[in-house]
Length: 184
Image 1 (cartoon, rainbow, N blue to C red):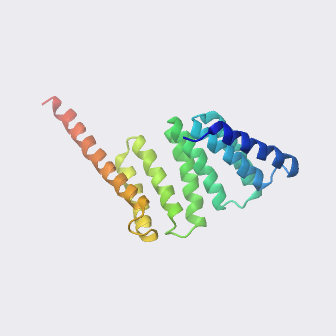
Image 2 (cartoon, rainbow, N blue to C red):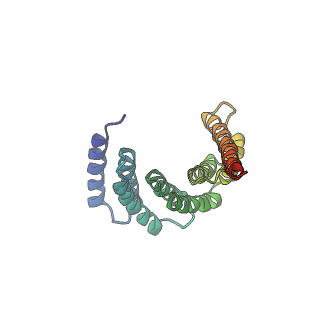
Image 3 (cartoon, helix red, strand yellow):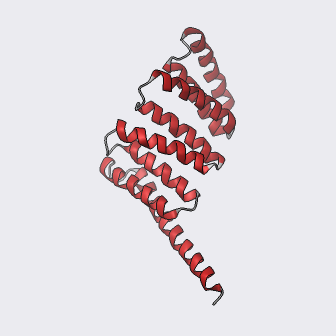
């Protein structure tokens, strides 16, 4: 477990220096805010994480072209916080924005694109839409198979996600079937 207070202390010191030395819309400030947001996210302080991720995002929106990968990362970070908070529809909204940019900005076999698909699959799983989760897990897996060596840990995670989605579908079907036959 990391020493979050130490990390925050140093990130905030760095941020104060940047705030004095750089214009308010400088991309380096966005990085600083994202770093602080990441620590708050890891600490489970989601409102503070959102505050800093959104500050970073506003700078990136002004400073970068609309399809810049850094904007996709920003959407992904915000989506991750909403996922952690259990607000899955909001998480999905931001993960889809991430995916939209990632599809345009990166090659079709880039692992970051697979991660975007995987994140959306995970949210669908949490929302109970197991077939949709499986669809996105499979898209992620196809990319991982092309982009990564066969012994890469992300491939193992990807297989695991697919198996769990299939099992969720089977269990869901059993429950629905059982409920439908209760009255028989």
